[in-house]
Length: 112
Length: 114
Image (cartoon, rainbow over all chains, first blue to last red; front, side, top):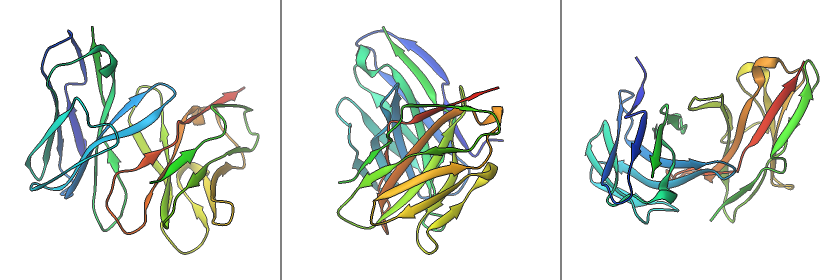
């Protein structure tokens, strides 16, 4: 079984809809992250969390919100989706021992 | 704040030839450096990382990278590439000792020609 899972893997939605992307991990890591990938732009950090009581904004948090429901779960929400939020979204986890981020398989979101 | 520049968006190389993918970074503090690989339709996989110690870092699949503090570079090399190395390669940086997210370069598409 994969250590970091994301659901759904693909989603097509319409402008103005509320969307939630979910991330779960079985690695036991405290730190979790959300990134978006756009062609030619690399990955950019949206939000990150050091534990269930700690949420931090990243480089491009506008238009997004997150919820850390438990150590193993970190959800990303788009309150009112817009077309320029069409992208590939990645969740990642890390710990202080390896100082390495491990990525999920990604969610491809299309906003029409 | 940090930034990462990957100087080549695309690098074509013949199979079994050597390759170097260039990465330069900018930061006012000490940094940790990473190279990730993304195969088509997949997530990111760590190739190698530099946290401290020896400036020559060896990773998976025969890749290595050298940290050069004076030139603020962390170039990725492989002496002989294989067709299976075709992928997108990302250089990333974050402040040393912290737990912030990574700052990524825009990526280099490595194309292996038979």
